[in-house]
Length: 192
Image 1 (cartoon, rainbow, N blue to C red):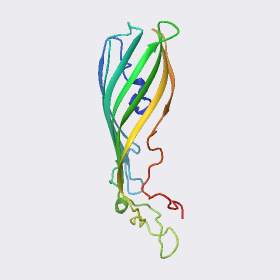
Image 2: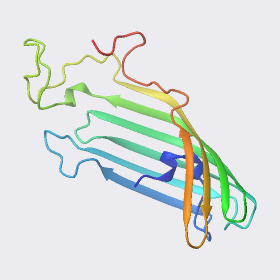
Image 3: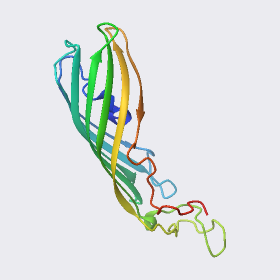
Image 4: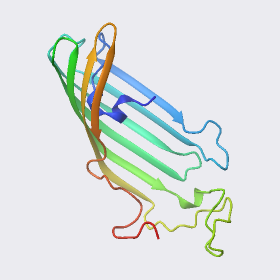
């Protein structure tokens, strides 16, 4: 499972009824047993959030928090780090058990690639013009191998909860400050 803030920052502050703070963490791997053929990907995230009231007794509340996310290949070839603050406002609508929330998160994102640590079982061989160099370094030239970038998301969420059923629906725009981030300079042909 993912932390809800990674999907939609409007979930900030939606806590169990008798709580007003939460600490959460996850770790996950995309492959259970990494091998040279499938260099596993490992991710971890931790977050803290708080809301302005305990329980759902008010018509309006807001929540705030912070999260840190890190993932990348186990061999270290590709990595990605996100540190963000988050804030959301929630208002009761259409009766006692329904909430409409608007949230945003903003911070910095660092990402990097180390081509010498990337290997594949069928790698491009420029001398022969084919993929015949198994487990060789990538040989690709990345003029820029890491970068920092401002990062922000904005989300909207509708939540309905009662003693029997809880459901929600929402939408999020991710990376709104820098939707096209990569390691190549502007104007370069990315698929020669």
